Image (cartoon, rainbow, N blue to C red; front, side, top):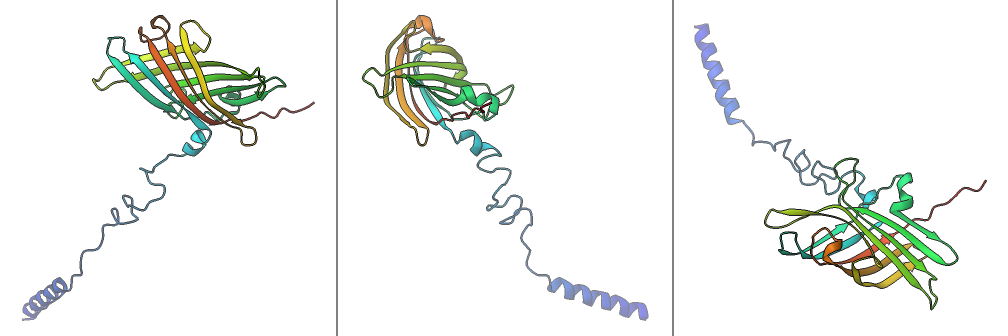
Length: 226
């Protein structure tokens, strides 16, 4: 008899707890501020990784190449090289300005993606010298290098550009610099450039047109006096 009452009591309690179940709670892993939440500030899929702001804060070089591919198909390619190495040993040739009584020299180099020692070495570099700035005799010396730059096109083909061009060099014509401005208070340098290169002096094997825009903030080194 006692066992009979125990069985009845267990059944009653089971029915009671079943009817008292609350609504399902939110999944802790997918909640608003969980691992996959929508309001995380520094999540795995964050907008920019650690160090991104430091690498892009000094401005960029925009480059457009127009011409004919090595397989004789026309192309136009545009990219923005915006990553600046910030190691002390590199700044002198990647983001510097050097002034004398008769010239202002700029050394610029930008990576296409965040640089590392092995895989991300696509760069464009510019040597830009303004002779006799502000005088009637002002002139500009300009050269640009494009290193290990793969142009990938829509038909799943690519070719690589490795070239150095001098504004007054062999095969270069119609060289032009416009909108040059250097603000000595902010060290902001801006200008646009364009030129043509004949087929024998560039990686495509065909005539090439290059143009670009520079908008950078350069640094001036402080040297210790002994």
